[in-house]
Length: 167
Length: 167
Image 1 (cartoon, rainbow over the protein chains, first blue to last red):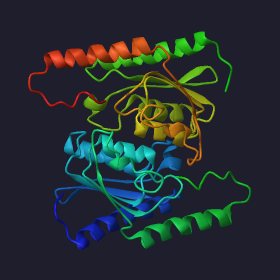
Image 2 (image 1 turned 120 degrees about the vertical axis):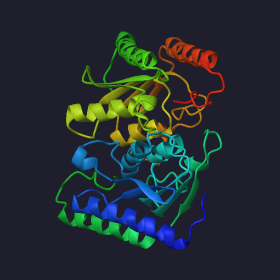
Image 3 (image 1 turned 90 degrees about the vertical axis):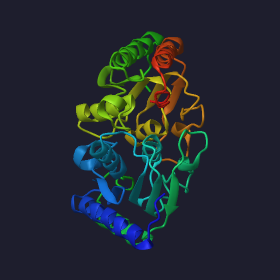
Image 4 (image 1 turned 135 degrees about the vertical axis):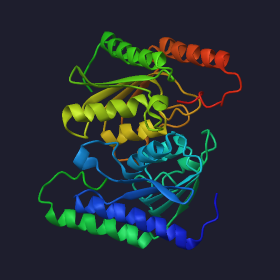
């Protein structure tokens, strides 16, 4: 993995937070992601499940597809992924399949996090690729964005379906 | 889950096999998938990783996105998914997120299968949805298609990258 200063990691997580902010403005659970390759952001994404009505439209999946399009290859071997929330099984699986080198996430996800919380798919030696994982980067900022979103949903909610507490 | 005769299950798996055949004809690892809702196929997909150069372009992900577009909803709550190969972590995760009712798969996947082989994500009670899973439906036909593909890749391979043994 390329040596990067803490400042660089914060810079990329700030970019992921801007993506999450975009999701928030569109009424989506605020999760954002960027993918970096040789110091350049090659893919961005934010959660668009409600807007697209697509259960696969998580920030990471959108960013991975965008990054693969940028490189013209499904192999993201020397890329790093920054995401504001710990990836779920689907996104952890996509990270393994794309052979991403390292994942940096902000807030842990006690309900579906599969990069260290419920399990750690990225480090399971039975798969044909292992991705390094670093959690807790800017976790307060990432978590606060999610908390304020869910608080506002609960305040608005008057008998609506209780589906918004997962993205 | 709706009561269905064995004939119906075979019929839908035959449709998934036709999708896999399409993948084979395009030089992709032959995996195919259909999603059924109230007796109607609402989404189809076959593996297109190489053609699209997209690591997320597995048969199941394409079929799930198509099914959600058909219903106009990310919730595929009363749907059944038929796929020729046991889903990987990414696809198992997408199945959980889309709240699919039941998964029927053909061949088991000893390398990445997460619906009973390496683990069973679909029945993990920590997630907010459980999907019933039935493996081994037409496993010979599904497995033979994969075996013949990999045999032909090995015969053609003369120092190529050894990347084709995962889809």
